[in-house]
Amino acid sequence: MDAHAKDLHDYLALLRRRKSLILIVAASLLAASAALAFLLPAVYRSTATILIEEQEIPPDLVRSAIATYADQRIETIKQQVLSRSTLWKLVEQYDLYKGLRKRNPPEEILTRFVKDIQIDVMNVKVIDKRTQNPTQATIAFTLAYDGESAELAQKVANELTSLFLGENLKTRERHAQETTAFLKRESENLSHHIQELEQKLSGVKQRAEGALPELVQLNMQLLSQVQREIIESDREIRSLKERKTYLEGELATLKPHTPIISASGERLLDASERLKALRAQYAGASGYLAPDHPDIIKLKQELSSLEKETGGTGATDGRDELSKRLMAERATLAALRERVGALHPDVVRLQDVVASLDRELQAAVARPAQPPLVKPENPAYINIQSQLASTTASLESQEAARIDLKRRMAVYAKRVETTPTVEPEYLDLIRDRENSVRKHQEITSRLMEAQVSGELEVQRKGERFSLINPPELPERPDRPNRLAILLLGAFLAMAGGVGAGVAADNLDRRIYTADQLRRVMRVAPLAVIPYLPTESELTALGRRRAAVSLAGLGVVLGAAVILHLAWMPLDVLWYALMRKLG
Image 1 (tube, rainbow, N blue to C red):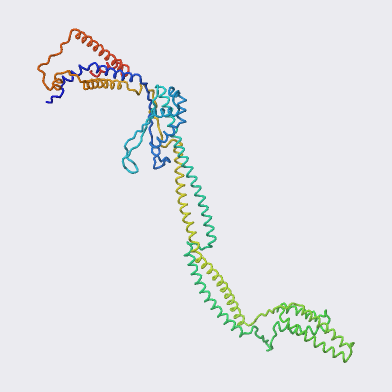
Image 2: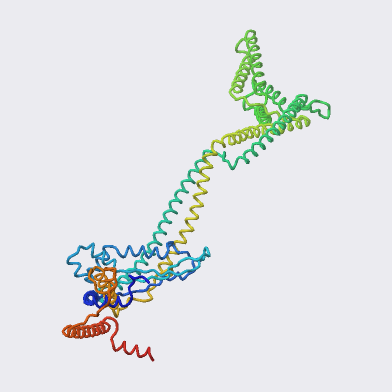
C-alpha cells in the first residue's frame, strides 16, 4: 500500500480542518445562485402551430405554379415578415422593450426582437411519389414569441401568425399571377415572331416564283413532262407540215370551177363571166340609151345582183375593158368628125356614148377594189381545200402550243436553277417557324396550366397554411428555470466549497497529522497524543454546532420557500407525493 495514499479518515480530517472555508464558499455560491434565480426577469412564450396542408385537387390533374418546397417558402416568408419596417411597426404598436428603447438604438432593438421570435420546422420521413425514395417532408412549423408578460407575448404571437398566413396567401397569388403574366408575354412575343416569319416566308415565296425546295421534285417532273410534250409536238408539227405540203400539191392540180354543159351541149357561163359580159353590154347600151330607159334600168339591176352574188369579182377587168372601150369610141368619134362634121347626128350620139363611158370609168375607178369571192364548184377541189384548211389550223394550233410548252419549260428550268439560291434562307425560316410554333404551343399549354393554377390559388384550393393551435396565453414563464438554477447553484456551492477546502489544504505547509510528520522527518514518531480541548473550546464548539444547526434549518426552510414559489406549491407537492405513494 502506498504510504502517500489518503484514506477516508484523512478526507474527513481535511473537511473538519477547512469546514469554515468550505461553509463560507458554499454559502456564497448558494446565495449567488439564489439571487440569480430570483432576480432574472420572467420570459413568457406564446406558441402557434401552423399545419402545411396539401392542395385539395390532385397534382396530377392540376399542377401548382409554386415550385418551391415548403421550408424554402417558410424561410422566404420569414425574411419578408421580419423586415425592418414590419418589426418596427409592431414595436411601436405594442410598445415593446421600453427600457431598451430608452438607451439603445433601433438596430439593437430589432436584433433583440428577431432573437425573441422562434420558428421551428417539423419534418417527417416520407416516400417521394416521383422517385419512390425516402425523403424529408415539412408538414408543419411552430411560431413562438418570447415576451415580458403573458398577455403581450400572446398579442405579438397572434400578430406574427396573421402576418405569416397573410403573406403566404399573397406570395402564392403573386407568384401565380407573375407566372401567368410572364407566360402571356412570352406567348404574345412568340405570336409576333411567328407572324414576322410568316411575312418573310411569304416574301421569299413570292420572290422564288415556285422555286421552293419542297417543289423541286414536282418542278423536275413537270419539266420532264413538258420536254416529252415538246418532242411529241415537234413530231406532230412535222407530220402536219408534210400533210400540208401534200394537200397544197394536190390542190394545185385541181381547178376550182368545173365547166357546166347544158342539155343542148352548150357551155354555160358562170356568174363572173356573165358579170363581165353584162358590163360590156351595159357600157354599149348606155351610149345611146337614156339613163331612165327600161333596158338601162334592167341592166343596172342585173349588174347589182351579180355584183352582190360574186362580191365584186372582176372589178379590175371591168375598168380595163371600159378604158379600152372608151379609147376605141374616142378614136371613132375623131374620125367621124373629120368626115361629116361636129353637128352630124352620129357625132352627137358618139359624143354621148363617150361621155357615158367616161362617167362609167370614173365611177368604176372611184369604187374600192374588193378581193374576189370565188366560190369553187369542183367537189374534189372543195374536199382538198377543206382538208388543207383543217391541217393549217391544226398546224397553227400545234405551233402555238409548242411556243407555250417552250415558255413553260423555260419557267420550270428557271425554277430548278433558282432553287439552290433560295433554299438556305427558306429552310432557315422554315426551321425557325417550326421551332417558334412548337415553343408557342408549349408556352400556350403552360399558360393554360398557370391560369388554372391561379384560379386554384384564388379559390384557396392549393397548398396552404392552416392554423391548428393558435397562440395561447402562457400560464407560467418559459424561462428562467429557477428550480434548475437553484439545484445547479447548490451543486456548484457544494463542489466549490469542497474544492476550495482541498485547494487551501494543499497550499498550506503546516503539519496536522502523524503521517505528515513521518513524511517530513522520514522518522516514525514513538507515540501520537490526541488533542485535548479545553473547557472554553468545548463551549465554543457547542455554540458553533448550534449555529450550524440553525443555519441548516434556515437552508431547509429557504429551500422549501424556493420550491413553493419557483416550482410547485408545497401542499400540491404533498398531495402529489401521497398519491404517488398510494
